[in-house]
Length: 347
Image (cartoon, rainbow, N blue to C red; front, side):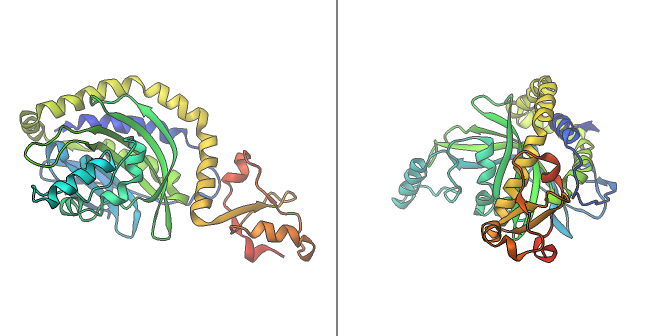
């Protein structure tokens, strides 16, 4: 067996970032045990009882590993996703061409990703997954709805004309809030002949680990370890190289260039992680429509619906706990505390 080279590099980056996170209060503890899964041409250590779904082959090989009891807990890799449009004008041109009797475009319902950046691609991910072409490929796509980027760190890109970013983001699935780390590359695609084409792009090597926000820091390292232990048979790799030598040459190049920047990535993430953690908490409050107040006398943090403080501040004398204040913008310890239910504790 030979380790899938690109994923080794992605894992190295994830490990560096996982190690930089603090362990603030309010993190939910979840115990995950890894068990070996042997597929037809690959094997991986995955959390026990989690389901695994695969699709595609070679350059567009994809897998999704997910907890059936909590779909926010997941690990995924997609070799290629697309095409998507780079401009609304190009999409309108293709639609007009089809309406005039031209060849149909299987990606006409794909969204416009403009500007073409990895972060913007992820922000449009939920629209991509709803398209016919995506549903035919894998109906169980990760749902990254309402994705909000906390931090995006540019990386060296393995593809000419493309860009790569390491991204920390929040997202929703129904009423649940998730957090994840993603490594994504985007690049323009060559026009197709004999029909619609031009002005299109795709996402490449999209890798992600996610979980419910309150437990993500507790499970991210074992999710990374799962990706690290993916192996693909040598015969399968050789077959893919023979079929798609150009694509896989880019993958091998990615390993060398990305590994050279690992120390820079680690230092940059560690220097900013407290700031980013606070940003993540503020973004989560905004997504969920909540605000936090704290009691300066006790240091306790309370959670209320957004807008509560303005009403409370006008009627402080009606409450026994009349000294609540908004959290200071950069007080890391307060922002990392698990907030109590304000309505139950307010007297």
